[in-house]
Image (cartoon, rainbow, N blue to C red; front, top):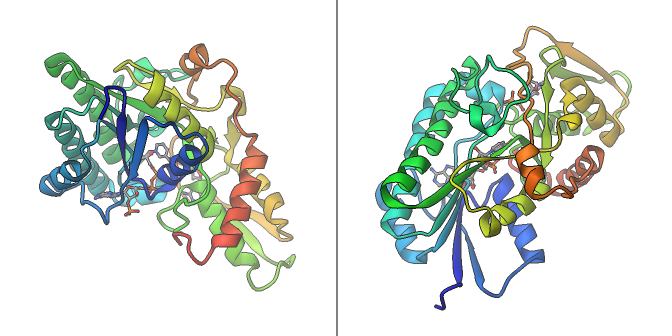
Amino acid sequence: MSGDEKIILVTGGSGLVGRAIQTIVSEDSRANEKWIFISSKDANLCDKKSTEAVFARYKPTHVIHLAAMVGGLFHNMSHNLDFLRNNLLMNDNVLQTAHENNVHKVVSCLSTCIFPDKTTYPIDETMIHNGPPHPSNYGYSYAKRLIDIANRGYAQQHGRLYTSVIPCNVFGPYDNFHPSESHVVPGFMRKLHDLIADGNTEDKVFTVLGSGKPLRQFIYSLDLAKLFLWVLREYDSVDPIILSVDESQELKISEVAETLVKAFDFKGKIAFDSSAADGQYKKTASNAKLRSYLPDFQFTPFHQAIKETVEWYQENYDQARN
Ligand code: NAP
Ligand code: GDP
């Protein structure tokens, strides 16, 4: 293998973000890059031996580490310990096995969900460890925050370039549409799809959990995948970087519901179940650092990305993660 050839192992390669990276790589392939996408069928990354075996098999020079226990607000609230333990194990196994195998660069994935609950806005990359996360998802948050701590340790002790990115809420094809596990966008798609399956009539009620008032930034998985490729190829710092749409693109959950209602041409009514949790009111993140590198990056407009995802879901409902 010549000096600039890369073997890139993508953990979590079968998930929402992994499948989007597969799509973008197929459109933007480079002769010196060999990509390998793995799922839990190839290795249980909670297990060190299984992790070692998959690294021994593929001998990666670079790793994009996406594998994680991932879920929406309600799944996090009921499984904080599982989110903590599974993610701690996977992250430690992947980073340490990468180091033992002399992997040059690892790009891991944090989330804007892990920032402090009580904070000033907009949130930026320097604020990850500034206070406790929102109590709804402390397990996921502390496990993810420790990736950044570990990356600094691998740099300090071993000179490694192990870094991380911080996406806002992601959606797109191959998402998890399971009713109790999903994030809000796939959760809404599943509900609307099922509601109109036996007729799109005015008496149907689409229930949004919580008040509909919380604010979120959403990135289309295919846009995020393009940014992941840029980070892998060009971004050479251990410090994390937020990968998010602009602050001006932040939406109320009620606006997300309305966009989905239009995309499904739903004829019924929207109701808000205010007895259900809202989670963190907002997590407004600044993408100024990203913009300083890529000032002209074009994000797919939200309604367009939603339309494409709804079309994908309707065509692939039987194979989707429901
Ligand atoms: P996802 O669709 O749920 O995919 C999770 C992936 O992890 C799957 O490929 C799954 O494999 C794999 N995995 C889970 N447990 C594993 C284990 N024990 N061993 C090996 N592989 C395992 O997740 P995603 O939404 O693409 O998330 C990708 C990354 O982005 C995660 O690190 C997540 O924290 C981060 N992120 C996501 C969002 C979001 O809104 N979705 C926002 C910010 C950050 P199987 O398919 O075989 O189960
Ligand atoms: P979060 O961004 O980590 O809070 O994760 P989610 O994507 O799960 O939730 C975002 C917001 O959508 C929260 O304020 C929820 O209360 C709200 N929401 C409304 N209806 C639903 C639903 O059916 N599923 C989910 N997951 N969230 C919902």
